[in-house]
Amino acid sequence: MSEDLKAPRKQRHTARRIWQRLMEEEGAVVAESSVRHLVARLRREIGADRGDVVVPQTHLPGVEAEVDFGEFAAMIAGVMMKLFMFCLRLSHSGKAVHVAYANQSQESFLDGHVQAFQAFGGVPTGMIRYDNLKPAVIRVALGRERFEHPRFIALRSHYGYDSFFCIPGSQGAHEKGGVEGEAGRFR
Image (cartoon, rainbow, N blue to C red; front, side, top):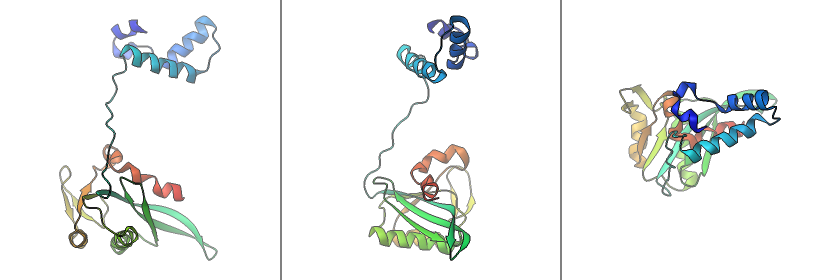
């Protein structure tokens, strides 16, 4: 494996190729996953795996939260209905409030905040992270700059917290990962 470090990156052995060579050339009977785990450990040991640096997020109690709207189906009075779940999740504790609505309108979005703040008995003192939801954002500008809807600004001003908008698409998917799976867990 250490010889691979001298080879151009695209010509180095992958764990899959090592497994294939073990099977073909040595007649080894071993699971591919076992080889992958061993190769990953060996790469770390020899310093060949210089992947992305990961910094764990830490959140102080009562300071930050995340909001998302998710879609789900429910049987109500014998009729299958498409509903939308508003979720506000505290970043430190992971405690969340979920409220189901018949739509994703601005009224539902704003009411979801009010319901969550009442259930928690308070408001995060720092910021709440958002996607670029239409009930909150009129237009996405450059970077993180957003033109917020006046009614959303009024809600934020009344409760005294800041908004933080995630980068659109897969680039910003990790920025509020705590709340992203909430609707799926309820489904």
